[in-house]
Length: 111
Image 1 (spheres, rainbow, N blue to C red):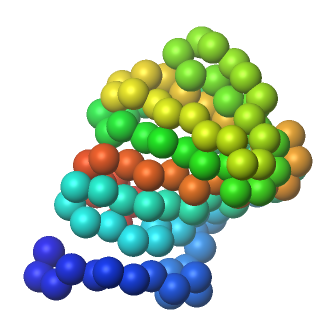
Image 2: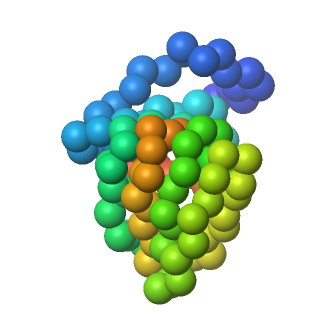
């Protein structure tokens, strides 16, 4: 990284459509850390997947059915969850919502 970015404004980065009703935008990152916002329409799915990054997620809006390593809970606005490295996890948006995820290290596949 040639120059460290310290601030990110809401409309600086465009949304990328991942699947119908599911969007993402990278907010800010360093090689060690990344913050990403995900938007979900009601019923949209974050399909089961895993990655080597540690992930912590904050429910900024809505309600989600979250499954981590076979354990499922409903997480509402203001709630959080953490996904250790390499565990299979997924979400289902029970209503329109947004997640703010932080990954360490950054997700090079998102850049």
